[in-house]
Amino acid sequence: MARTTSLSGFPEWLPEERIVEQHVLDELRRTFELHGFSSIETRAVETVEQLLRKGEIDKEVYGVSRLQQDEDEKSPKEGALALHFDLTVPFARYVVENNGYLTFPFRRYQIQKVWRGERPQEGRAREFTQADIDVVGDGTLAFRYDVELALVMIEALSRLPIPPFVLRVNNRKLAEGFYRGIGLDDAPAVLREIDKLEKIGRDAVIANLQANVGASAEQAASALDLASIRTEDTSFVEQVRALGVSNELLEEGLSELAEVVGEAARRAPGKVNADLSIARGLDYYTGTVYETVLVGHEQLGSVCSGGRYESLASTGKKNFPGVGLSIGVTRLVTRVLSQNMAKASRAVPSAVLVALNDDESWSAAQDVAGQLRARGIATEVAASPQKFGKQIRYAERRGIPFVWFSTAQEGGSVTHEVKDIRSGEQVTADPAAWQPPQEDLHPTVAATETA
Image 1 (cartoon, helix red, strand yellow):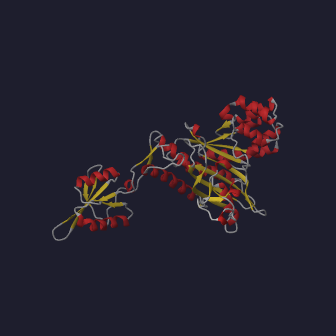
Image 2 (cartoon, rainbow, N blue to C red):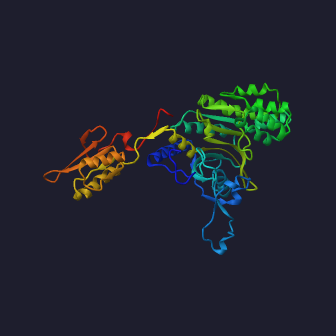
Image 3 (cartoon, rainbow, N blue to C red):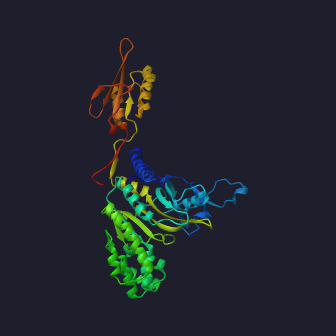
C-alpha cells in the first residue's frame, strides 16, 4: 500500500492517489459501456443464508446488526444480514428478482465496494472495490460470449497505467474430460491439488494426488503433464492430443478453449496464454476459466479472474447461465501507487485560482469564477486579499496551474489577465471566452517509467 492507514485492511487514498483510482474506474466504465454493458448497483447487504448458500467463506463474512436492537428485531423476518463479500452472489439474486424486467442476454457491469474479513496484506484488503462484467442468458447462452468477454477485458486492462499483463485461460471441460480419460473420476479433487502447483511444486502435487485422490503414479504424472502445458496460441491442442487421452468432454473443452485463445491471440498477440494449470471456482465454474497476472508482479496473484457458469441463478423453473470477469480494482491501484507506476498531473481538480485585490473585490471574483465554471473550468476564489505573491504560492502548493487577476480601470472598465504560474507567462484574457489547454482542463494520469 502507498501508505499505512490507521485501520488495517481499509485503504484510504490521498487526493492525488484518489485521482489515479478514479482514472482507473473511468477507463473501465468507458470500455464496458463502449461494448454495450449496462451499469447496475446492488445493495451492500444480503441475507446470510443467501451469501452462504454455496458454503462460501463464512469466517470472512461481516455480519450487520444495529448496536441497539428492539426486542422484535432480534429475529428479523428477512433473516440475519451481512455485507456482500463479492458481486456475483448479489448479481445472481438481482437476476432472479428482476428477470421479468430484463432483456436477455443481459449485459451488465457493476463497480462497487465489497467486504471480506481476510488477513490484510498487499493485494488483500478487508474493504475493496471490484469491477465486474457479465453476460447472462435465459435458459441458454451462446459460447461466443466467452470469447467476447476475454476481448473486452483485454481492451479494458490495456487502457490502464499498469505493467504488461497476461490473461491466462483454461477450460474445466478440458481438464475434467482428461482426468476421466485417465481414470480419475473425482475431477474437483484433482483440480484442488493441481491448483497448488505454483505454491508447492510438481513433486508435492504428485504425492498429494496419490495420497488424497487415490491416483496411481502414472495417473498423477499424466495430470501434471497436462497442467504443464502453456502456449500463446492454439498449439496446446496438439500438445494435449499427444498425451494420448481420449474423451468426448475433453474434445469439447479443447474446441472451446481453442476458440477463445485463437481469437484473442489474433486481436491481442502476447496478451493471452492457454494455461492448463488454471483451476478456479471449483464450486460453480463449468467451462472457460480466466486469470490475469501482471508480468513481473506474479506474486501479487490474479488481478482479474472469472469464468463460465451454467447456473448463475435459478428460479426453479428458469435457469440463467452466464460468463463473467471481475477486476480487483483496489489490488491493482494499491500496486500502481506503491510501485509509483502512475502519477496524477495535479492533486486538485481546480485549474484556476481567481486572486483578490481587496475584500471588496470578492463578489466580482465570484462572477469571474462563475463564467469560467459555466464552461467546465474548475475554479477557486482566493479567501483573502493577501499579497499576490502569497496567493500565487498558495496556488503552487495546491497544484493549481493558473492564477486570474482582475484590475479595475478608470471609467469603470476591468482588465483581466491570467498567469500560467509554471512558465510565468501572463496574458490578457476574457472570462467569457478564455480556455486553458486541454491537458490542463482536468487532472490527468500518466504511466511512469516504472510501469
